[in-house]
Length: 412
Ligand SMILES: [Mg+2]
Image (cartoon, rainbow, N blue to C red; front, side):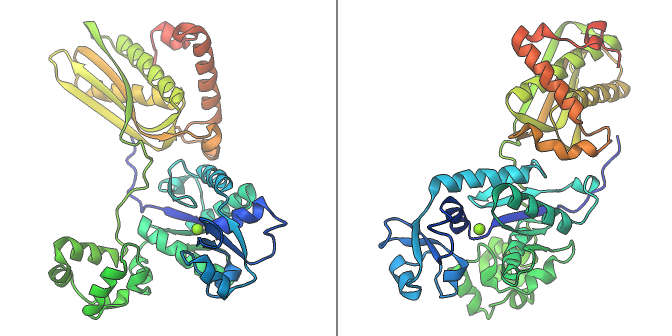
């Protein structure tokens, strides 16, 4: 099994531009078309501004401002209530468009999504900036909404880069900003401490007491000094934060779960053919279960309990999630061979599991991987075959269709 080189993480944050305003304009192009627009939560006059269009922002209007105040600043503004239904719908559409590029999409709010593209450099032969630009175009085409995209090696950097992209967007530049690996400290060093997420007004006051307003001010102090001033945890956190260090993953919400099947044998199995047949049967069941539950998996694990009760296992993680039988079955067979090479003895139990699950929201979400000829990645043919088999098994029960090799005793 080739070991993959450790690469930098490639994370994006896609953040819709003036989301509520943009959605309101799509819902009611005549009423809310050209006017400066305020989107208001609560009853219209007494409410608070949820979202302000770029036009009204020029008058000093900001979100969270009382509507009455906003109207004094910009009397021409048209007030529209939050179009809740349409916003949820558009949020789902954005997510769906993003999931065409990577299954690891984590919503951070209704209009912000982290996208983990780590590992896709093998598939997209282009820079992260070029991928981000394609994503931006795809979102615009399918949702009629523009997003600004920031990218880098951590969520924090992606978030800060997205804000940079929004600032530059005002100058009509494409709304993408990517911080290259190694460029984190320089990028964060240009900012004020107040711009760093989680550094709120109270913390800012404390920092100011030590003469720190910008990130650059704080970078001058070593970790020991910061820990003395802000406690061990606080100082350490700040030290990493201002260097753009943040190791939080993009969470596929249910990644800790796994789906597995195992079989304890009445008589221990000793023949390769018998073990191969069992692994095939278990892997096919696991794959079908997983698809029925609407998941994709990145990791396949095979477990074997030897005749003397020693339990051993081996696993393989794919560069991208898979759902079809072929990659799962082939991998399970390969792992079994590996375990058998390490110790050739009788087996009293075999198990196959898939883990690192993510939700398969749309069967076509892996369409982009089709061009690849890598044996590790599943093809459209694999998926079509798997769906067909699932359909037949639903109709006729599990024995409805068996693979020829399964009937012949597994010859892999
Ligand atoms: Mg936004």
